Amino acid sequence: MSVKPLDGLAILELGEGLSSAFCCKLLRDYGADVIKVENPGIGDPARRIGPFPEDQPHPGKSALFLYLNAGKKSLTLDIQSDDGQEVIRRLVLETEAIVETFSPGYLAANDLPFEDLRRRKPRLLMTSITPFGQTGPYSSYKANNLVSFAVGGQMAMTGDPDREPLLGAGYQADYQAGLHAFAATCIGLYACNYQEIGQWIDISAQECQATMLEFALPWHMYLGVGSGERRGNQLNATAGVFPVADGHVGIHVMQPQWQRFAEMVEPGLATHERFKDMGSRLINNDELTAMVFAWMADKQRVELYHDLQRNKVPSAFVHDMDDLLASEHLNARGFWHEVDHSEAGSATHPGPPIRFADFEMEYEPAPSLGEHTDAILADIGVSGAEMAAMRARGAI
Image (cartoon, rainbow, N blue to C red; front, side, top):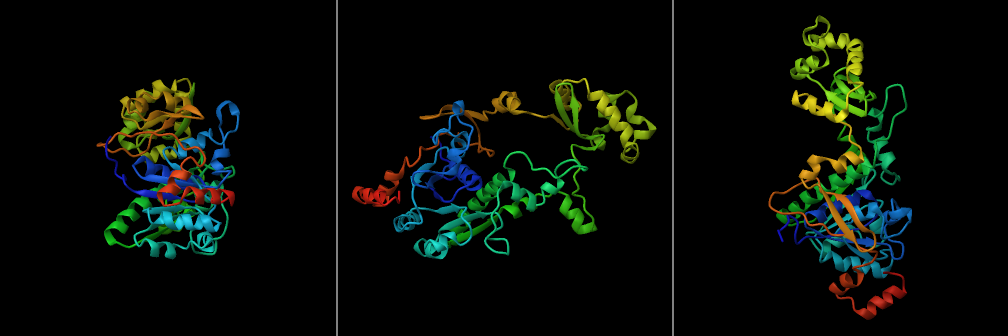
């Protein structure tokens, strides 16, 4: 068994939502021991989100939960109870970091403020992920993925120019917040060890989105005009997504590739007076766009993709889920892996986005609800009789 970068670190995952779950999934992938705290009886909300095998809801079979929580340990605990709060205080002594998604002030209101926890363990790190951060006039506002995508500026740039703004596919705002939290937690762990003091990291989903506005925000700052208007799938004749016979192919042809691409579309096109340079192509964009549409219309996407790549033209065919699962490239790299779960059976999961050369990934199933509660409590000195009393009070 190879040693992973985060082996030996213990992480306490509090709160609910995709961002903290994804952050802690990545921490677990790279070796950390993650204790996921779930509400007694009902568990994490992701357990109730499908898809489920045969479309039959089951708390142990949610595909979303199984993916986000592979390899974690499940501890059922009511942190609003005195029992639950005392368990958290004791767990902090065995933990390097907390990742939480409660509303600002929630932990303090439940007698678990960060400063008190840090007094118990001076090197403690806490990463807090919220829609708007811990401070500011919106800090107490509620939000979800759609809200974060909208208030972060991304939605303003997504969609066709003559239509309403669009929400990006998937839960990109939540996952991006989780990815930023993962990076921040790793940096924070290093800082806590190097500086020997605890850290509280404040992650705002809105700010995570606003940092990824590409050229739109700098354009506006420097020139005082907006360049973040919606442009749809078609930027111009040589940059966009075009329909082909069996799907869509995206291209981004820059000046160094123009001659090779133009010769593919029509012999002699590269030196034609109306299209010889970027300025002339911009002036005659409508005419050139029509030519590219016509040229691509009867092509097969995979064949065209490889033809374009052989001619050094940046391109891609639009992959659907079947394409991703069947991808010869992803499969050659071992990206997909099978995980067997005692309740859900075998399922295909994507691998982590970061690879280290010196260790092999090992994949474990997600826990059943409360699977590790007794073992975790026993490790911090809770007796069997105490556990029974806590169960009777509904604390675990």
